[in-house]
Length: 338
Image 1: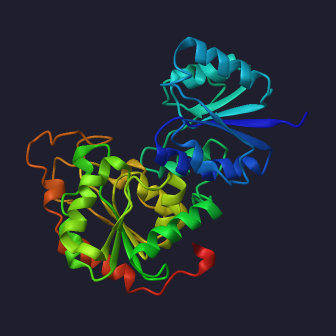
Image 2: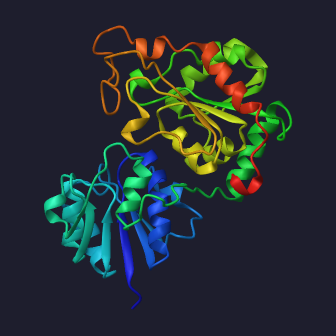
C-alpha cells in the first residue's frame, strides 16, 4: 500500500487557503488527504495535490463523541504514515491519535501539542502560510503562493454574472465589505464606489447583502451585487478577474492571494504582522499606524473596546481610492503570474 499523508485543517476559510502551499509541498513526497469543514471543502476542488477531501462536520452531523469515533475509524483504515496538524486543537490531535497515526506534527504552541510526536516552532511575526510550510520542514525561502482551481462551472457562473451589465471583458474593481468580526468592516465602501471610475462588483455572503445594497444605491447600474450568489470557488474565479480587490482582513483577501489579484487590504483592529496579510504580487495595506491601542485583538472584537473605532473611521475613501488607482495604473500581470 502506498504511504499516505493526512493534513488536518478545520479552522476558518482563509486558513484553508493558506494551507494549500503546505499541501503542495507534502504532495511532492506522497499522496495527501485533507480533513476540512463543510464550508471549506469546496475550496480544494480540482486541486491536483489533494488525494481526497474528507469533510468533518464537527458542529453538525459529526458533532459529539459518535461523530469523532466514526471519523477516527475511517481514518484508521487509511493507515496514514503521518499527520500534519495545521489546526492545532486538542480534538484534532486526539483524532489523529485515535486514528493510529504514529507521526503527528504540529506547532509547539498548539493546544494539542502534548499528543504530537514532533513540535515545530510557531514564529509569531511570520506569514501564516510560512508557518504552515514549516510543518513540512520548509525553509524561509519557500514559495508561499496559495492556489485555488476554479473549474468550468465556476467560469460559466461568473460569465453569466458579469454579462448582466456589460461585457465579461470590461475592467472592474471587486469590493468585499463584509467580515464576521464587526470592527473589521471598514464603513465607507459606498463612498469609495463613488470615488472610482470603474465598474464595481461586490462579493461576499448573503449576510453582506445590506452592505452591498449601500454600494448599489450609491452608484446604480455601475455596480453588480454578487453577495450570496456565488460559491467560494466561484468567488475566487470572480476575484481572479478583477483589476483590484478592496477588502477587509477577511476571507476574500486570501482568495485574492490564491488568484494573484492585486489587493488593497484595509486593516483596523488587527495587523498584517499577525500573519494574515495579502500574498498577491501587488498589494497595498492600509491601516492607522498612529494609534497606540492598535492592534487590540487577534480577530477583531464586535465593538471597539474604547468606543471610538478610529482604526477604521480615520481611513478615508479618498485614501483607499488612491491606492486602487495606483494598482490599476500598473501594467497587467502576465497571465502566467495569476
